[in-house]
Amino acid sequence: MTKGQVTATATRTLADLMRLSGRKALITGGTGHVGVAVGEALVELGATVAVLDVDAARCQERADALGRMRARSAVAIPCDLRDEQATRGAIHRSIEWLGGLDILVHCAAYVGTDQLPGWVVPFEQQTVDAWDAAMRVNLTSAFIMVQEARTMLDASGTGSVILIGSTYGLVGPDPRLYEGTTMGTPAGYAASKGGVLQLTRYLSTVLAPRVRVNAITPGGIWRNQPEAFHQRYVSRTPLGRMASEEDLKGAVAYLASDLSAYVTGQNLVVDGGWTAW
Image (cartoon, rainbow, N blue to C red):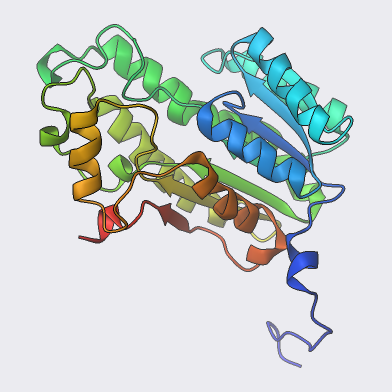
């Protein structure tokens, strides 16, 4: 047999490929809308998770909720991702409690509704402080966490990193969507999410062959946005609606599990066709 050939083996069922029993996962932004869906998906498939977020009380509430799905399935690890040493320490605390690490999902981000000074304002009023804060949380923390977790992910044998992108990491914002609202897409958000996608590609080759690295790019998720924005968004979405958090569960299950064992360096776009026009 030549190098690179694969021998024929008995195939596993789809249920076996999807199963995450015994695997350990870490979720940043674990109390946010996307992070909640990610945690539920991973615990439902059998994983044990560490929930990382800046608010200690909310972190514990989310870990308790996951624990009601399955006993001792989650731990709360409060962490401010703006602090490099705190972030590195949170990785170690998570690994210690979990007893290893197989899956890392980075959901944490400043988004277009956050009340950060100099953030959701016209471009000429956006500040370097807001830009730097977004880069630190949205992008730099992902770099730090994967760097710190690499050894354990490599030892896993099934290591999978999932970074959460955005359609605005792929295309420019459409200002017409936001007319008459207080919403917007700051430059720092778009640039950091574009960086997330390139970091995904970079890490997929640097961490190969032991660790897979992929991204999920959601479209706009319904969160009681102003009706004018909602109608404009839906009108230009081929599937005719905004996303729900549930729409991301299948993507997470696929990329975290052996369903995607031969997939790395990819960006799975879950946007209802938004970027297909």
